[in-house]
Length: 322
Ligand code: NCD
Image (cartoon, rainbow, N blue to C red; front, side, top):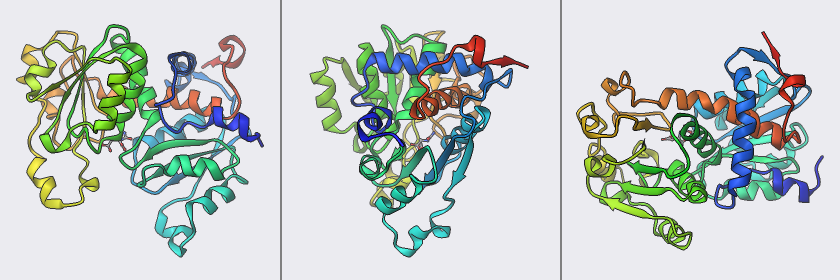
């Protein structure tokens, strides 16, 4: 097992403290592993390692792309399964669960409805904790794959990006803001008034001298953007269901909206979408959300390898073409 000093570098809890150097290192590592994710090559650097999945909230992409990443690098996966089927249903605390799972696995991927859960878990675990979403808090590995997508399909330097939808409860946009501040991006925000970006994040962006512009209309916000990052209204985080129905139908990405944007604008979405991007957009050159979901695999390969002590590889010796 690693000692706690090593562990604090290997945990991935929030993008708030990520430096540009650390992000660029992860993205470059992911790039080397992309042929493995594409099933064009083999690489077994995680042979003999075990990843534990602890998901206390629903997930498709995050959970399955972590599993895919681990398996394609030769590692194995153990999964707590549903909360109802685990000892959590008997009243076990998260602290005890992660203490125990630390004895079984080399890293723990945790998704939890409570903000701060991953940070708390990292204080009790003796293996790295990777935060796969903590309530409305952070979702750092989603951000890394978002940055990978932007780097691959657009550009990270001199970027104008519009973040739209549920900016209050959407953890993906919170994490993305912090990470983008390393690249000096111009960030446009557009949301229903009830779902604005939390003040504490706006203040921090101001301290980091990031240009933020708040818009009322999606049309105006996307006009000069390189990226439109759309999000789902986070229904499950609304304390009052009546509030949800008030805001749920306000913002849509349609083909018509995209008539007046830059030809190279890319539309991203962490998925799942509900009805905020119409299916008619899928076949336009702007849509890149399904490729974005795929990029989760190489990025999570890099994240897992680094968590398990492998910070880089020589593709010549580690990757075999098939
Ligand atoms: C996101 C999440 O869980 O925060 N999904 C994901 O991980 N791709 C976004 C969402 O649920 O809306």
